[in-house]
Image (tube, rainbow, N blue to C red; front, side, top):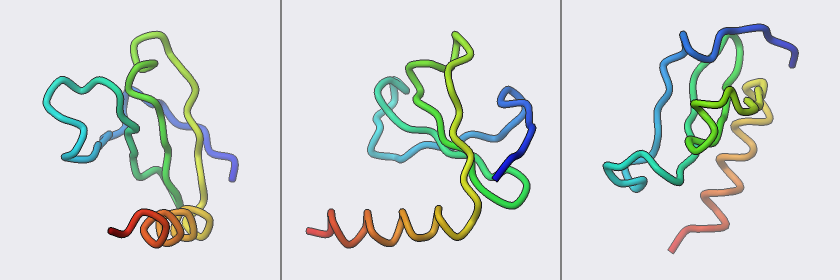
Length: 70
């Protein structure tokens, strides 16, 4: 998926398990027809952002949930 967007304009979210300091976590934002993911440690320096279409993102979530289910 090729999408041009301004990461600073996106509404980024993170897991409640990340704690209150916003440190070592992955942030996710809904963009166009998919989702963007970035590392919270690299936000200030314009770090990389990965963008996924909806299908691959849903597959990732489903497999991650199955793998890490207690």
